[in-house]
Image (cartoon, rainbow, N blue to C red; front, side):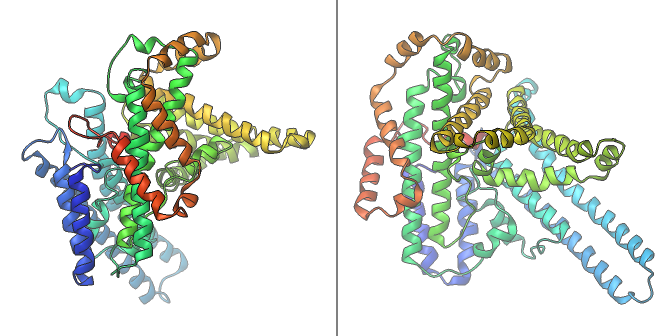
Length: 516
């Protein structure tokens, strides 16, 4: 069942009614049953017949293994604390330190087992499907929808239990609900257990204001997806064939200004597609009284790439920061290596360099086991490091030319960041590292404005008009939109029905980020 289908919307209305009609203690079990049903009904890539049910085996294995391992770690931590407390006066400081280190090593082995199981399944599915090995080996591998999202959620849960930041969940059914809560299983956000569990398992009474705010968020999400993103998809499918799963080599020859144009439009399409799905997910949560983390905060207003990644796909960025970047940067082997460096500045910066590059390399792999995604990740990491190294020069420049600051310079920074990220994102458009670099070069070497004008003339003007007006509406911002009167929201619903891209023969459910 797709997120944009009428069947989903009808079933969702029924779930809302049941949720606030049943006894409050039955609310979270209802959400679990609904999540399992929705997950099985949409199912999985390459699913047919009973294969959708087989896919639930992935989820069951992930949940049960994480539940058992987390409880094993928690039990060991409990015994460790009890032993130290009971023998505090008998144990010397050195003996207590040695005992704690031994217990921590044993707990770490269980954590590594849990991470290896999850990473192994995720890596195998990504490699087999991204590299084409599945077809070469003639194996029928079912890839669960949203596997990267729920795998990261469950790995974060295991690490937090190991670090003592969260309590191990006693009820495996509640852990299952956290893992595949249906609004967020397809596109995220990548929630943390301690944050989501505060409202996920709590009883909720009907709150009209919260329900209205959630409904508005859902409407906005459908508007972004069906009216803007999918209109742009129709308009650009021949200019950006690789990004839409097609292969039209002749049109990939467009370069210069046309390449820059496609990069900018792809950025807008990707943003509206991704944030549209997340608005639907977060809005559904609000209607249930469940709070999920925001994943976007006006990223196209960013003045530099570092700020951009604090605003774009926030939960993914913070996940990699907390569970990859920080552990690597303070790892003992890395600290030992940098300890031999003579320069104090190098000792401080080299761990950051290495941790940044490794983190972005892994981030690229998360998007797909292909060279274009690896290049995309490394390009982000390198640009971030360069911008950080240039900060002292920026400071001297602004000190020397204080009048350069102002709205005009802020606008320049925003435009520069948008174009820079559009360039980097082109690795996803062309799916080829050499071709992407060739298109980069052509923008400056061979603008070919006439070719751009000719290409634009062949595009459907109605799709451009509808998508353009929709984008203009988004400039108001979510907060301002929520203050609009109910009549405007009814007009938005009408716009979705009239101008939205959906219907028989069109897969409006194909959110771009469900492939990651």
